[in-house]
Length: 121
Image 1 (cartoon, one colour):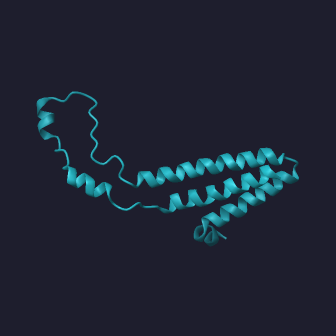
Image 2 (cartoon, one colour):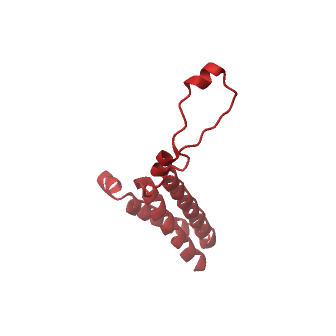
């Protein structure tokens, strides 16, 4: 069972959510409320997946934030700003979709579809 969850976490999550939804429908929870909850959780997971994708995209490469004024000695020892070509070569790398983003996008898409189906019944 643990191997199945590790091998395909999206499908195990889908099966768990379907079982939970069926149990809640049997306990007379309104399908509209259940569909709205599924839809909102799905939207949250889609946004979280996009945050994972943008986080791996080196969005803030080359930015420097100066919080306080530095003394002359600290300013001398600061690392130099990277060159524009170095920053551009890092930012122009291909988009990376890691396993967490793939999970959030797949499971979130399923929850959105399930929420629409439960709301329209």
